[in-house]
Amino acid sequence: MTPLWIAIALLLLPALWLLIAPMRDARALRDKLDHFEANDTADEQNVAIFKRRLASLEAAHERGDMDEERFKEDRLELERSLLEDTASRTKRPLKTATAGRLAIPLVMVAVVGASTFWYQQNGAEGDLTLYAIQQEVQNDPDGSLVMYLERMEAEAERQPNNPNVWSSLFPLYRETGQADKAADALERLIAIEGRIPPLLAQLAQLRFFMAERELTPEVQSLVDETLAQDPRQPTVLGLLGIHAFDNGDYETAVDYWRRAVANIEDPETASSLREGIRVAQERLGVEPEAAAVEAAQSQGVRVTVSLDEALMDNVSDDASVFITA
Image (spheres, rainbow, N blue to C red):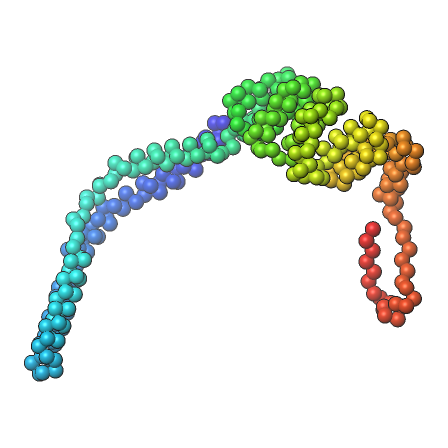
């Protein structure tokens, strides 16, 4: 993990530099502001404008262009405007160029601490550890499945809420014949990821084989919950096909396995299901469809297309024909 933290530190350096950079120009900026305020003539300009407008009002009043009441109102408005302009320009004294420098180290520490905390909560440090364990075991001359399983179990104690830990442990337990531990790992994964159909289907399948291929109430409950969310879930359909086959209900088994094959992605599993369909059809005394399917996939399907004679005059010789099989 050392290279990871070195990379994080290198990424934080530009951020810390941006925090420090403004302080380098603080003195020059303070001198500019001080010079600007020392030479600011805005107040004098406002007073000069006030005097010109007041003189214009007095001249108009003396000429009789406005009465006494209107003159007083306009003069009061000018005086109020002058007060507002000068009051809004009241300035606070400038702080020194070194003011606030003590806050910079505190902000830097806060940035580093917040970044580290955020990465620990939302980053992939745990997954990188799992990958490192996998690579270490693979590259170890004495590496074995048992060693990998022991390392992953130790990691599960350190990362109990990491779903990738349990998704790795589940197949390891299953492959080593530890069905109870495999079920526990899968249940921990479901508790983290939620009761989604793929995970529920795997748990139902595992419990089904642990119960010696019987639909116990627990297995049936898992099957019902899975199909309620996804009626086409292939793992559950395959499980139901196995149960029907074991009970001599070959037609139902073929139906379940056909639906499973239509929704499965793993070619090896699909091939196994097709073989099961073939065996079930043989026991039903019907011609297996596997040979026909295989021939269709390898050689194609020949079809003859003809057009009704009543439509001959309405279709040109170069018309496109679309065939859906």
